[in-house]
Length: 201
Image 1: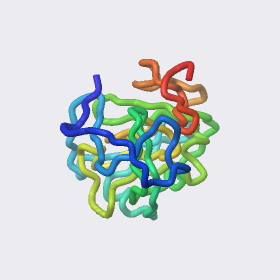
Image 2 (image 1 turned 60 degrees about the vertical axis):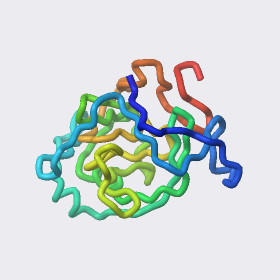
Image 3 (image 1 turned 120 degrees about the horizontal axis):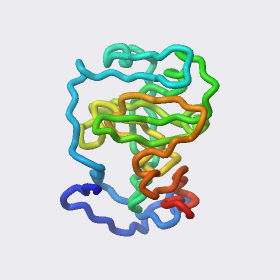
């Protein structure tokens, strides 16, 4: 069961560039909160991030170790499968490319896993070559727990459920393994420009 923030509402906008809005989406100014369960609240001193699975050796970073890696600040549009889009969002985080430099793997797929037992699966090519980050800040401020803080995965070219909140690591796998929503009938890939919302779309 998903939870939606109080006061969440969407209104069509006519003052935005339509080329930035995938089909079936409408633009919002607020930042709706949706999740599959209660909001975990993990102190940064207890937070770790691990890359494991089909790798030569698992690697774990503490919060301070992740913060010491080169970070990027960038602006992207985000699109939720519930049909809202938020344009021009600013994030700061570490590229997944940077993290994957620490492991050797021949895997083609990855499962992002989070506090609260949430998982989502992705092709490795969807989170490499500058297409995904582990972000710790939104609009210049520490990421709030309701939006996945202290850190979440951000994969802006796919529907937002692929950008796992409260992310704690990546498990690399040779075969694709559906995650929480994918096993419940959401599309395996989730490209908003092709309206890949559910299996069969």
